[in-house]
Image (cartoon, rainbow, N blue to C red; front, top):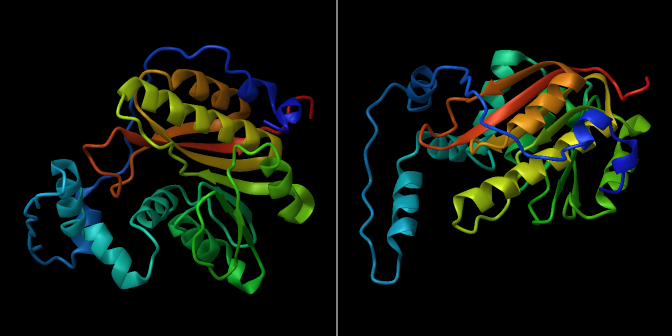
Length: 263
């Protein structure tokens, strides 16, 4: 990474990947899902597999058609169902506040940026949200969008240059690498992105700052968690209701950044 020398040593040094991590899931799921459906019985839509449509794509489409979060996001004008994950995590831990400077890594299509902009009052100029993704997506009121791969060597300095004072109060990362169908390889790729995001957070956050990052269970999360525990006062595993139960997806919420080493 471009700013590797300036990052906190405990987060930047991931020499080896280690053993399994305990899954401490947080938050209930049923209440939220019922509220999204308005308390009414949901109609189940079946999808017939067309000749040219794979079974997996048909299952994905059927799941989307019957997902109450997908339906709710369309009603509310949210970019994706992922917006509810951030809403639910913040509703439980209350870390997004008016006036904060937020960086959203892997932001497309913009669901998290929408929620962050609303909570920090970015549209009124009180807070600030800077989003980055190599995918192009539609503008969002109050959000500055950078179309660039976060792993580009120029990305970190560019992000810091757009922040007021060059520092952030919150770093969000919902980044996920394209899958190749090999579980171990896919897990290592997503953890590589999580580690890069954590190293950047340690470099850019103000003391007391917050880091929220997506990870996947797979046996190599412990290195990241151990490093975060050295740099943040509290580190939690969070499984919001909007995260599908069958998914190995988890979020790591680290609060109370201690500041760069040597401060």
